[in-house]
Image (cartoon, rainbow, N blue to C red):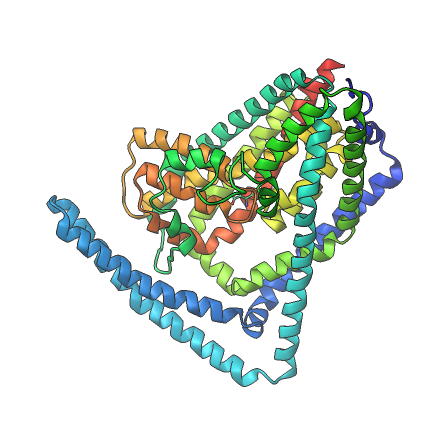
Length: 526
Ligand code: ASP
């Protein structure tokens, strides 16, 4: 049966936007911008007090202590490798590495003492009203950010399932999925490839790794665990899931377990097949389709409700993130140490956005300024949550309500994009891996750059739309290029910031993809 006419209530409603709604959206956007400014100011100027009063400082000291031990551990490993090495040059290099790692230890020790002094002072001040206030303020700031993020995440599963099923059933004839799927995948592949190319070109020209300071570099256990997983195995696991994980992979054995693990890709695959099947069972399917359409509308209403709370939540996320990383002082220090690296990533991401806008103009026949203004709320949410998945409800809301993209395109391209289309992550992974190689003086021949090109794209596809996922899948790229994974420690301290930037570009890519597919597939069908 055909549902093409009945399935896009949102799209018809969105084409003519009432003036009151436009004003409300604009007001909401201004409120979010103000919230971000306040969040940054609080985080930068008051973050250090919040950091001390909330006890977060203890985690930092812990990490410094672990870094201290890890330096010794890596130095010993390098010495053991040197002993086993047959090549004299390689032995020399490994011994130098061990020596360099040990030379970091006194500097780390000095920092630990500084932090201990700060903690001792905090202990003395702990009964003062200012200290107590900073503690309560930190807890409340963290709370409002957490609750906003949690509620957004809460909506992701119902939204993905209902919108995907509606998107598929609205195609009417399941064979039409080929055209939409073709354009969507083609767009994802093209944009990710361009993103990686921009990243490789920039990092090779700017060479930020030559001035890198890796004294405080630390490798997280989650990254170490990934070591040893081969590329083929990792890719196969995208389909099958890891052994013993019933909810993992594209085809999990338990769909509820997949939902529990927020395995969005599995839910998308299930919803596509389920939606397709519904369109083939005639009248009997109509009731189920109507149910999912109603459910989808209701979930979108809930998204609108959550967005009323966005300015407060976004303030909390911004201020707390800066504060828990040590406040303005710590941020400046990281920027000072890794400034060129940060600049390379940011320039690359900006160039990529220009490319996306170009595609939007040529293929999507849209004014990029107006379009980006329409999705600004989603971009700011991405920047503050560092999660494409958590931003998904806002992305769909913005492209449909503000930019008039049909529900058919948005409900297919956006959820799939939030899981597999990660332009920012792909660019970032390529830059980061080459940066790490440069920082340890490793030359990468052209063949290795080609390997990085392909693996960075695949690693980005494999990264989930959650914070810091790209950092973990980067291990695949490092291994493929033969760059030591311990190098990740150098970029760890600033990753929380770059994660936000690349997630914004990931979401921008998804949102622009919606307009292009809409123009090329839905509108061309009339
Ligand atoms: N945080 C990113 C996202 O959700 C993924 C990444 O870590 O690059 O899109």
